[in-house]
Image 1 (cartoon, rainbow, N blue to C red):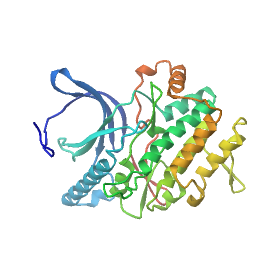
Image 2 (cartoon, rainbow, N blue to C red):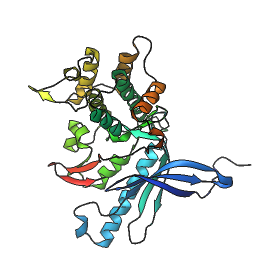
Image 3 (cartoon, rainbow, N blue to C red):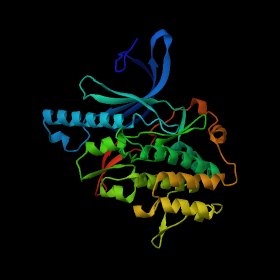
Image 4 (cartoon, one colour):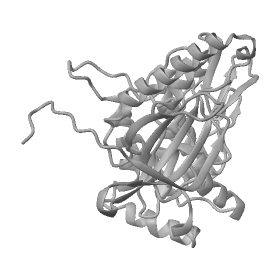
Length: 345
């Protein structure tokens, strides 16, 4: 019999199967978690290097660098703890976090997370661009609506004292949106961008995929949920048109300019989400999601995960053999506020 509060310690063993992605801040691997009696569970392991990543670290003493690495790992742990309880159909589940010592190197933090068999949205969009075709309108809106519901869930989480946790993704982009072979849309990498933000010098750097950043992120200030709405709005614009927005005469050109069959309602939704002034965007992510859903389900029927799965298998006939491609070619980047590149992840 166990009593409440009793702790059970049991070691875990991993077998690395394949490298999925690699960047300046670490690697992502497909792995197998092993348990007793032949138990196995597929997982993704994301290793986040805490080594030399700041341009001024070469001028630091060994002790100063050690302190800096320790601070970063602590930030990573704290962020993982904050988002580990985000249990939602459309969010990649975090299992646990650990550290690994490598000979002659600084310790690396690693996050064991849900493995998603499929492709990321970047690969999905690139295939359509290569074939010179559009993503089906209702299916593109469906994908964005699932991400919006994931963000709504995260944005509204509260602690045990019923205080808002203030969770913001900060790096919503096609490489962090995964499409499983079963047609389930998953948002990944909660907490990583914020940990990177604190890894750099305050007030001098900003973190994210620059093309998808909200304007206020470029000012390197603390942002709220509306930054995620802006980023998702840009992603939706790209899904619908195979391009990012352009501005003419100080105004953003609506998606219908590039894709004539785009309904006025969808134009309004997208333009509201990507408004330059954050006060002009949606006041909550749930309202954004509801408008997207209304746009595709107002007749009582529309796409489902089954629809998406069938379409994925059509576009990617070998999708069962595809890795999830977390990260892909597009990297999260730390920029100096003067626009120069500082760190790839």
